[in-house]
Picture 1: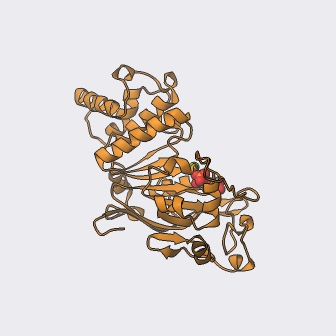
Picture 2: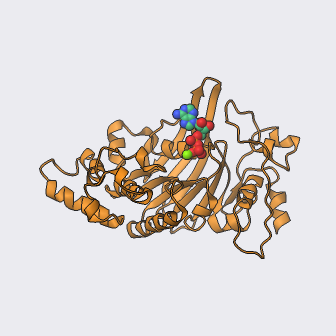
Picture 3: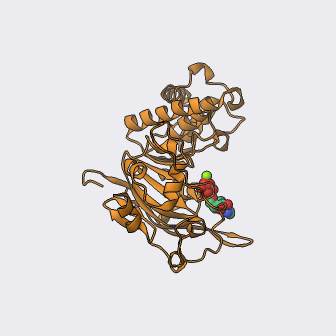
Length: 328
Ligand SMILES: Nc1ncnc2c1ncn2[C@@H]1O[C@H](COP(=O)(O)OP(=O)(O)O)[C@@H](O)[C@H]1O
Ligand SMILES: [Mg+2]
């Protein structure tokens, strides 16, 4: 990260474990990263690898088991309820399914107005000012004013997601966790929503943690990409570098599954053995070893730390240096 960039979010040794009937599930297990103001960190990995839990724990929608989240100089993990409520104005979330954040019995304007009322931005008598604010937000997210009294079920998926985005933007936050915001949408609408999110980011100087299981979605949107596997980070680097020269065998397998629309490029799809398991009472060592075509007994002998293979590019694999040299 260059000196001119200002860190807005720093996540340190963050852990979130769930107690389940079969044991302790390590959904997020010692995750570390920093995020610069105005930038996007793409978080990718298969379903169940802990992406949503990470996003929610950063926002303290889940209480962390251990570790720290520092946002804009404040220790989020140490905030009181009252301080957390204030911080909500700056830290928001957009969900994959807008119905998760939208009450089906509330109209577009009621949904966008709700966070403003909860935070006490308008008194009940300030109806006109509140309505003006809601209409501005609707304009910003491309919702026609005639929809102001529409209910979510009357709208298509793209418009519903625009409400979800509007609701998250209403308080003019600094940071948004975008949890698979386009995964439920048709491909043609995905592009519209992604463009909207990018425009808004530039205009408002927003910082995004952009979660997706689909690497092609974050390719053009992210400054950095972090690849997760069963609660842990296996690779993190500049987005272009990740696509140009991935090092971790898991990242390579994920990338090889994206169709390349260039007939000159030979597709070498790396098959992944078995299904993703759950990280319940995980054993030491690389969690990907069971599925890795290159695994040797050393891979499961002890925990594998994330190590820098070049400036700004870290990989958790004991063979990282060897894989990197093989590509040079
Ligand atoms: N509230 C919960 N209680 C118990 N286990 C959970 C809970 N939420 C998530 N998990 C488990 O944590 C792991 C990570 O889930 P999640 O963060 O939703 O993954 P992703 O968003 O990458 O699909 C999964 O094994 C999931 O079953
Ligand atoms: Mg998820």
